[in-house]
Length: 495
Image 1 (tube, rainbow, N blue to C red):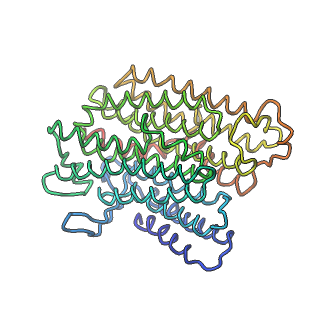
Image 2 (cartoon, rainbow, N blue to C red):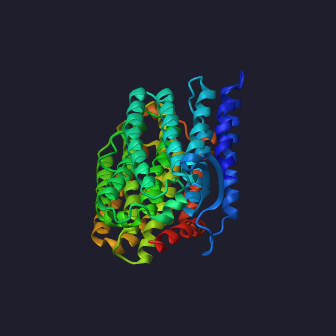
Image 3 (cartoon, rainbow, N blue to C red):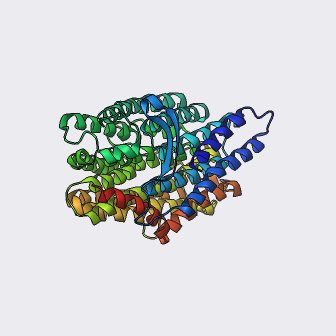
């Protein structure tokens, strides 16, 4: 079933390229139908998922030999962490594809690249083979490069090039680290389950530190962590809104997910030794991202920098979970919070970037000073932006609060002073989102926006679905937490 979730959008992408003389509307409907298949399959997997204490760490495992001489195979499987992030990604891809985008008379190629990117993104989260993981990880750069470069605006080609070169450099560091980890396991293997069990490089201080550095550098670029984040703002500003939603909501999660799946799980002793420096870097990212976001006049740049801030929360949770200090209960809380943060951030920031698409499609303008008073003519847009903004700043009753509360409660058990400093980021985030709402929707409205169109049905449905999930997780997080806890408890107990 997991293999189908990857292959269906991949085959759909190739089918769209050879679809003769299809209208843009027909192409969009086909793409929506194909994108719905992985979500349906993952919901079935979710319904069958065993969250019991005696459940296998990875479920729905499928293995097909690929390169037997290297021990490489098509290995896919899922635990609670991968299932939660994969399901969120499938929802977000469906919403982004359903969004009425400007395809520049190249609808088939636009939706084909989206489906291709969905296939390889799900592959990253479901792969149980390190080399297969790396292949999917690299291919995600290709899909995003073309979506930004061909359908972006202003300086999109240059932004796409910077994104690709910067993140590809990180992926090369990951490749070297993968080779070092696999070769250090005794007999060569790329099976993630074997590597988790063997814990290679334990006791090899210099070698294990260099391998960990390679992973942190590569995944830190993807996350992005300060100071490896400079590719992010131009990529977001010049990308179409739905593409930015996927970039922030799905691709950034590959960085934090990679940290959990590989060095955290396979190098637990080395990770624990360097957890504090990673936590300090995470707190710097939290504060830097929020402060720089507060200073942005450009709506999209402001939201882009909040991703640096929010992914800092997730990495802080991972660092606290990997620390030697603290209790098992605190580490479990921190790691669960980090995963919930990835899910919540994907839905919330995905919604925020779809909202920015409304501004660009209506007015071709991201400068917040150009707007004001839009609540008078666009009440539905105002309500959607308000819910997304309050969720992002961590208001109780919404998904962001569930994640951040667990992260900081868990971090207090390991690094109380880091948690205390990191809390300042929430205060700054609240200020920047409240200021954004004030400047866009309240106060005096310039006369030229008197005919600013409110959300249409085709925009309201995908955006409303994302925000409904944000509210549902905030009000009743039990179903999500049960799935995630089944995996995080196993990882914490094994340390």
